[in-house]
Image 1 (cartoon, rainbow, N blue to C red):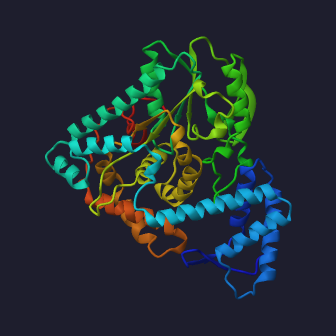
Image 2: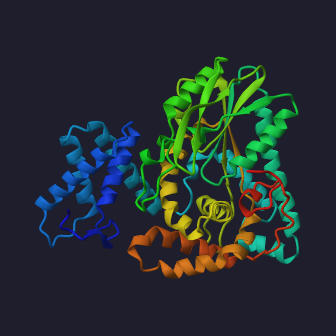
Image 3: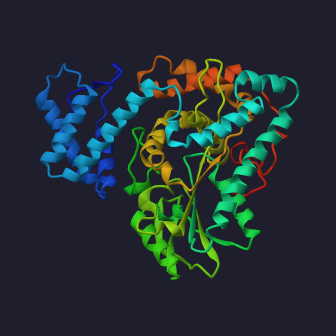
Length: 446
């Protein structure tokens, strides 16, 4: 048992000491290198606390850096060098991301080709939706339905281009990955791409990676105690690779089934085989992650990446962040379909974002095509739906050291929503819109 009750965060805030945060961090590092023994993580945590107790006086408040230094030393001394390396890498990456965030006011857009961003910005300027002020003027003129039509047409053009590029490679193609971070619109886009390609005679067979999750008890957990489904290590990547390779060779495999109600995976449940002229269609958060299709020739794969690449400036002159758009989308979707409180989404979003910056964004340059799933008209709809909540969260978390990230996001989004002209009537949004995936009313079944 630790004799310390509080620790000092990097910001200087003093927060309660929680040993499970140490245990979770150690277990997460172990999972990253293939280990899944929580008892070992718990025992190592006890050793860390023992060193802390022996190193510092009771009245001392350990700094987070001091604790992490001790974790590294204990891992190495205990013979867990691979886990120590994963822990050190994660720590360094986190610190680097923190330094970069302090320098920048926008998304890490250097990962997206500048030609793509330039075309989106040019389109936004030509349609007067490049700033909130310009968007507001068009809404006041009664042009909201026209804005919806223009945005939907631009998105459809992107989807069509992706389909055409896929069609050009059908001679060798074995699989198409639809990739992108949370709430980027993968499900709707997958349906639309399949519709396009069916018209030219291509047939697809869905490969559902969600069936390859490890049993719930084997998943790492975040600092709030929630099980983490966001990382690629939550999936049995070796089994995914084995099955994809066999399917590419024309062999039959029996895929597992994952029961989300019980958190249990059942092996060898459903037989699947690629028939002639069939292509695997894989909708996956981590389709770009190398371990997802390791050892499979590039000519067999086509990777489509999705992101709401909105190019719109708020009144403060800064571009609206893509991650904030996706966070709002997920709030609405999870509240409607998963009985998940939007407040929980806000509190945990930093964890989702951390996984994205480690496991998705670094591999953007491996995508064959990038689709912009942003709809500039979605911001006015969000004001009508969530402005009261963001105002409440902005006030509630203002002086809470445990909710610094939640406050930063809530404050930023609240200031954006305050400035936009609200639109309550979403009837102009077509039933097959990618936005319907989040606001409801879609013609598709998800």
